[in-house]
Image 1 (tube, one colour):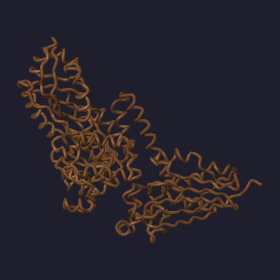
Image 2: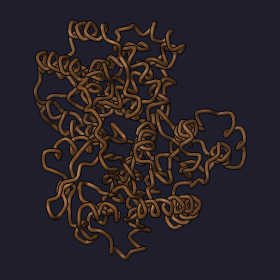
Image 3: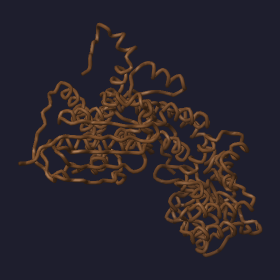
Length: 360
Length: 242
């Protein structure tokens, strides 16, 4: 297992951003680059970096705002935050430091100074991480349940319990891909769900599957897969499998959703006014709930706004119901559209349905 | 152009004059970022004696080169404005087809992430060949359109016509507009309207357009309404080959 340190670089100047990315990558860091404050905030959650480097003068969301948003979400309580600034004016620097940033650099800076500062800020963070890793390794070795780590469907590690079920030794299992250890009819389903995790739509999922050992012996297990570590190039995922207890099968609740999707397909998903109304009619009858457990993709508020929108309520009523302003509702809707790459709320609904983010 | 007075009325210049502050801040930002890019890349190349991933090596060189171009372009613009202010620039007149003034316009705009597909172009040519300064014409069009595209989302109307010894360029957008009281300031170098603070820029574009149009003996008129859009009408006299 390799634990690469992840750094998020936020700078609206693409050339400097790419330069810093190259400098830090060459030093062995895993670097994610965001070219605006808004994307930076989004990446901070998706990528969960160990350290953030952020330019101050950006438009429309500047570095101070990025810092404040992340601080509110308590994300940077433990993630070191370093400002890059184009101004050497003492006032600006002091303002940044007063906010609680860990360090600042005035452009142009020395690479070595920047690297040294990053290393220093990371020491504390790494210590915490090492402790966590230690606990994890103990659990990994001693657990009676099968545990394995994989990325991009190649198996990276498996614990003794799983090796025993599979009748393999460690070297053998490292040559395998995940489709090699499960019965083939489960593979498409699992792969699709893994993709959903990788896309950040869900954090984890459960599935009852059958393991196939080297000798062909089959073992039913209840598989739980979740994202373990995110990197800019992909994610490290963890699979856990206690032995299968005979649970009743999940009832298909998606009948209504598939009806709506069929309707949309027939209409070519062109979002006309009448289609919007049809959709709303369909949903009005239903009690809309969000899949709150496996939905970290939208925030709690965003979910509430989405669900009320699904009921076809106008903006003003939604605002009243949630005791927030129209503008805030509008902001949440904009965020929903941004997250799902949609141009209107109906497309958000379609996206949420397709990806099982809401239940009707 | 800039009235530097490092010792005398220093305090006054610093704290009172917002225009002065704006100019210094723009110059500082426009130069610091590319200089930081160049410095950082040079240090990277030196540290590993060029022994880094080939694609990173290639990118490093281009990033340096592009940053130098940025600095040069910024300095060119400042110098152009300075010279134009002192009537020290001389147009180079030549005969060319009027349609050529939009040469490279799209690729030039694309470099700044501006989408020229939003432009709706209309020609109305009485004379197909004109005598003027082609390079200046290109620049006038580029800066006018880049402003229109930057400060609006929808289509941008561009009408180019030649008639009565005048080349006329009309650029209309339905964007954020300029406040009435600021319209007359808009051609001042480094001046940026109060409603564009959230969009990056130097405040040089329209000043350059203004200077070049004047140099070519033409006139420029701007009408704008906040939240509704802006129309810029430029008329430049030209000569015919005979």
